[in-house]
Length: 187
Image 1 (cartoon, rainbow, N blue to C red):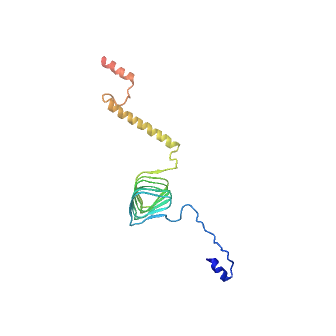
Image 2 (spheres, rainbow, N blue to C red):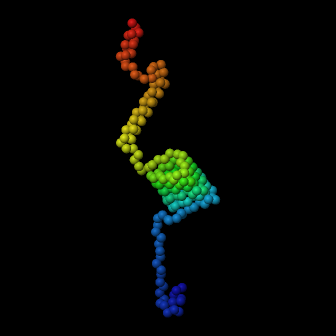
């Protein structure tokens, strides 16, 4: 169209093109998907971008990006994402690199993360596992060995009390002492 008007204005008939701006690939700045506060959905939810959930959802959630569980959200699903911020209710296990539980956040389920932050007022009922960190030191290894010895001893005591109910639960009397007792009884 510029060629049509070019001759009228005294401009050359060559068409100039503006450079095309290419958006970089990668994680977008905002949210790719939003489940609004008036939504109720169920099933398996997958996304490679960032997600915000404010409504009700039942199923499983697999997110390659980040997820924000808003204050009005009621999620009954296991959540697996890179970074997880929870301001609403989650009933399910949560797995991510970083998990942030805000003051209004509630979780009934296990958390597995490299980093965990909680604000005062947040609620967690479940087991927390910190992944990527070595929780055991040399002293902790010794304590673990002591715990195994104690567990083996307890199992041995229980087995003896069940199997040998007529005998003493512990073999604390030496064999030669029992021979002396039999000699004393015979005299």
